[in-house]
Amino acid sequence: MSLRGRFALGFAALAGIGPLVAVGVLHLLRPAEPVGPVLVALLLTMLPLSLLLSLLLGRAIAELQAAMKTRAEQQFLEGEMKVARQIQTSMLPRTLNARGLEVSARTLAAEEVGGDYYDVLPTADGAWIGIGDVAGHGLPAGIIMLTIQSAIAALTQDRPGAGPKQILDPLNRVIFENIHHRLEIYEFVTLSLIRFFRDGRIVVAGAHEDIIVYRASTGRCDSLPTSGTWIGVVEDISSVTSDEEHRLEPGDVMVLYTDGVTEAEDGNGQAFGFERLTEAVAAMGREPTEQIVSHVMAAVKAWSPRLADDVSVVALRYLGPG
Image (cartoon, rainbow, N blue to C red; front, top):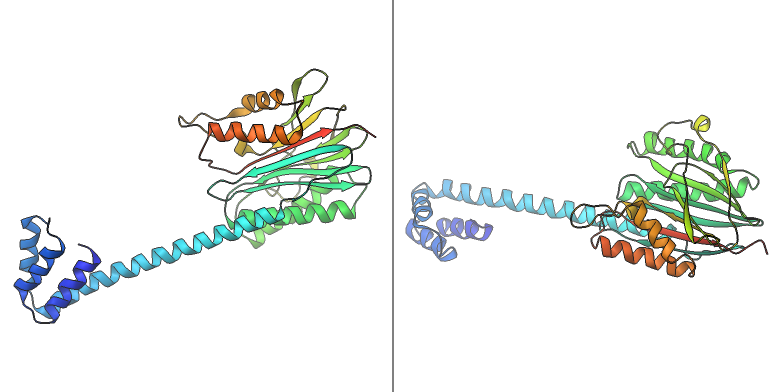
């Protein structure tokens, strides 16, 4: 019986209308009710009115309190997700500029907020480029992503001559402390940090998704594996983190992305996958980076209309040393 029905029946009994009238109220509220339940309700009305009132109103109040608690919890979660989304959208860069690069990037938000991170920080001789993803969702992921963005920006400014490894080692200690001792949660971050130089060199450290490089000379894509370990799992990663150097030629396009791209599933549970991603990049490799990003995003959206995780793509074309 609905809350309205219980309240109406209880107050009918309280007002002294009588058992039969109380049952009539019940029957009017539920005209399609089978005869059996109505007879049961009639028997219940033969109890003392005070006991009947206590049973009906007590049950109704309990259900009302439970419904109010559920609604309050839902509103709290909605508020938390709103804050997490605001953190994420406010910390992702609004403009992406670096001498020697044509850069475009975009994020597609899932229903549940993730912790995607990317950034391009210009330097006198190139740029720092970061791409990462915080495990988990919601406000904790947003807080961790905010910490990563702030720490990388501060460390790279403080150590202009450092390599990626020299940034990731202290960054990991900060994230480990925050995750395990302050937030007291078990999360981690997949993160690659790249130092780009205007002569075409890129130095990479940190474990994230393989980097895709569209080669202008061949029209094909190479894959650059990222080595190392996740951020925030152990306190010291210095022994397993190293810098790896690669080179871009003028016209080459480097594509970074989060696992929301490759793991996006269609209606049959099949993932979009790395191969489809490289095919999408290769098909648009000679186009402006904005079109490359748009094409990849459209392909992922068509494959998986309802995203389970945030999707982020960054495309960077090397324009040459001039």
